[in-house]
Length: 385
Ligand SMILES: *Cc1c(COP(=O)(O)O)cnc(C)c1O
Image (cartoon, rainbow, N blue to C red; front, top):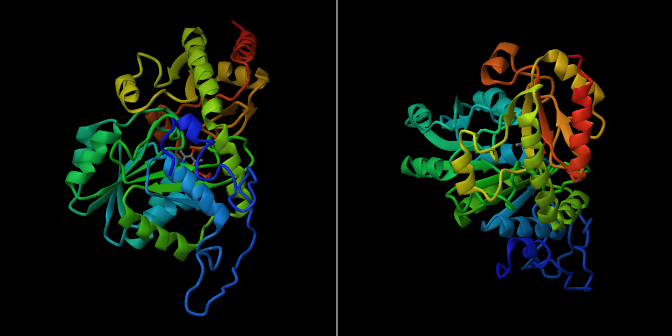
């Protein structure tokens, strides 16, 4: 395939730049669930769309190339991709996993896998010693999300992958927050990259989708077996939407990252903001690791307002961002982790991790950052001093 260009150009000029049958410059949506076979003895490439579909396959090939893996898989949601990948494990296996992992992953690992005899230890993945302490003889998987949610803690992907290899374990990385435009976990030693393509990859808050990319062909064959066995495949319309969103991934992120950097600095300077979490700020504890393993700090940041009264005034008066769960869209999205992504976590445990009732997460979209800064300034000006 065409790795001859830079990432930005490869988004457009890849194997699927036009349909070889017609020259159409958009991947055709193949709705067929089944495929006519011409020969009794040898079937064609496709037989049934759960097992293989050309539209889904186009997306799978494009993401595999962008993540520099050997094979990609498209699922009906990020959680479908993540839970199918976890099914590579067996009874009595153990997982070492980021303590501030995505809420859905936390729930699946702690409430579903446990019933099948797969145990886990949540650790602060920024602390290599803590990870080493958590390793057990049956540890088969290191599961990393970096930067983490919502506190944007950064894990050293190469260090964790090396550690995993020395224990004969696999490393999975959830790359939803940065995408291969910014960070390529397989090149850093990970075995599988996972995505909620619902977020930056599709980018328009209009599709729910998941992706997995595998580095090793034998492992890819095992994941394909699971994708086909559990059947949580992505529908063709949705595969097409992700393919379309991907074409603008580079240009969207380029804008949003620059805007996020400006906003991080704006919040950092503001007297009513007590903390800013963004791995692009020089005082972020893992600033250097982020710079080494990724080309930028991404377009998501979190910030804590001085107290709950300031928080309320801000949220009530801010006008531009949508106030919602999710991230990675053309419009800026303001989320409230305590009541949204981390609502299931007891308040005490949340506070202990820094997820206070005054913490907000901002996914920066494509608005002019000047308008966002003006909006946020005016909302904060409403606070009675
Ligand atoms: C949203 C998200 C998921 C889950 O993806 P869905 O598409 O909602 O199933 C997993 N990981 C991260 C980091 C996410 O932000």
